[in-house]
Amino acid sequence: MRISQRAERIEPFYVMEVAKAASQKAREVAHTDRPVVFLNIGEPDFTAPPLVQQAAQAAIDAGQTQYTPALGMAPLRQAISDWYVSRFGVQVPANRIVITAGASAALQLACLALIDRGDEILMPDPSYPCNRHFVSAAEGVAKLIPTTAEERFQLSADKVAAAWGPHTRGVLLASPSNPTGTSIDPSELRRIHEVVRSRGGITLIDEIYLGLGHDEQFGHSALALGDDIVSINSFSKYFNMTGWRLGWLVVPEALVPVLERLAQNLFICASTVAQQAALACFEPESLAEYERRRAEFKARRDYFIPALNELGLTVPVAPDGAFYAWADCTAACQQLGLKDSWDFAFAALENAHVAITPGRDFGTDQTARFVRFSTANSMAELQTAIARLKAWLKP
Image 1 (tube, rainbow, N blue to C red):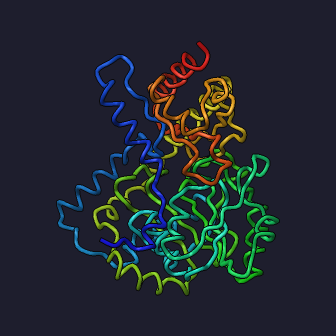
Image 2: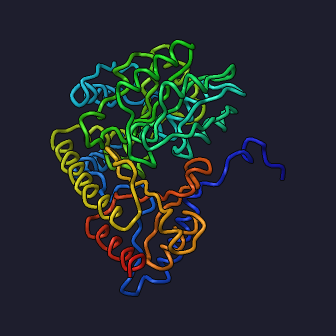
């Protein structure tokens, strides 16, 4: 069977390849006193709050399971609009919000609507691998631009201007970022957008971790910069609804009918039950619970980052959001005689029974010395992981 060139261009998602190895190890040691601690997948250990679960059940019991409009349920679009005002102080009309089957579908729709064959999209190195694969699937070219710790592993306006070429269509950013947990300084983001706008380009920004910001300096939506921003968001991270597959886009008004046409053909609509449930995310009781959980994520970060640094797994930039630690394992690899973070991740799994993600997924050669830890786990699990890593690295 002949496979399309489009499919062949998509690299494996190495996060999941490592996850398979971790699952196998977990089965092997499940009945021992050292079960695997999973710090490799970016999935909150919290589930949807009670009101959200009850709303889903009520929708099923009431038979509210038919298709919704392709753009999403009007009450949910309005609820998201109201949340932007109350949480971020940004006016986003509901008619510019498009409900999607997760942030993945949102990115796919945005790329299909805005990218033609050969269009170049500038992205930071490191960045979330699937983002560049969405660009590739739309027959565009993801151009990764190396970033430094001094830049918070984010693009700068100067680098965007220097990299802009005749085929450049725009930028795809993430703030806070996966894998680094760092955000773009709002003033720098404004300058980036001015560079892009002056060249007639598009600014796409992944804001799925925006609700999990821990620093007021960075906790601002890019949507405050103007109506021409395309923002991708999700119910997976802050709202703890990963498997519900529900996300949204905020787009310029002129793009809404284009996305509606694409969504009608590709997805029909996002899950009706998930949309009905998501309405309950914005109830005061649910929002209070989400804020309590956000504080818990911050407490985990505040414990885990210093503990990693003490082990020599240096985190060069403290994450201001999300639930990741982007740690340089160069010293540990030298100590253990390992080549890079790929070998280190498998060695940590074998010797400490701690599953982590090597940097291979997230960019070019410069990411090979980094590993990503997810702190979306209980404090007890994080403490266990640190104790095991310490026993292995500093016996």
